[in-house]
Length: 263
Image (cartoon, rainbow, N blue to C red; front, side):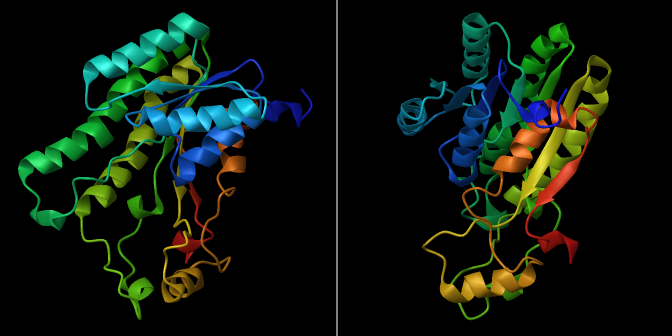
């Protein structure tokens, strides 16, 4: 196969949980542009429908579907609907994340911690297991978890100097993303014999207009490339991991953070 052809996703079926957020949007865009029949799923169906509409207008095949990761029945229905409609799922991207239960920091109630872990950990296990069973039938598949550099490092308080920003005080996101990184290695071990690859991308901070200028300056100096992430930085790595171009790559955590965690 020609090396450029190995990056093509034509004939592939992909599912992205989430898909309307800062990183999810560019993941969907990349998969569609590479030729994949792409499903996007989350609780916020209206936002996803708008994403799908935009991609369809560009000539791509994107379908929005309902998914509540806190409910077994919702995960099971999504799985059934995709397999019934498309007959397979070659690529699973676990991108959706809930950050609504961390407002009280580590003083959250046990119920709040449990609610967050149910969506960001337990549901990750279930949806990965369900779709990997179908991948086993084809002896092929790529599962990509969207982690975070925060799964590798702690809080850099210096990023907040001179701003009115408050450093991240909840342990949940750090705990969940760190766990996702090691779950990636475990799942790669379990699914490797079936030629199913499991990898993880760990993005850095995404610059948005609401960021104070001083915060952007502080953060950018902390990276090796001197800037925060933008709306296209994840597209290439996603296609690399989703496609045959990374056929011998599994169990890896790839930092897409401008060198932040390499310092």
